[in-house]
Image (cartoon, rainbow, N blue to C red; front, side):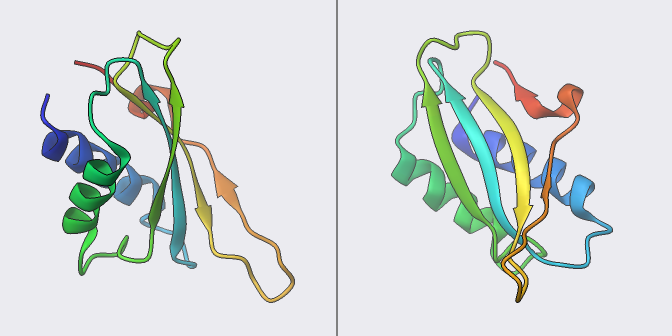
Length: 103
């Protein structure tokens, strides 16, 4: 599976989960498994191209690596909104059936 396809899956899943959010998405938290095979720089650049001029244009990818995890390429762990004026931020999980990207 190429990186563009992986990023498109992330984009589609996050857009679906956040379609009724009032606040913009600040962070998309992901875990890259042993089989991911792309650098963080490649990943961030590719996702940046896909999210450009979209409801996710403000979102940044936060990447955690887990080389012990060989069952998936990437897992979308959750989404976080920007903090409000009180410093509070809401986080949302991704449904398990949509969170795992496998080869």
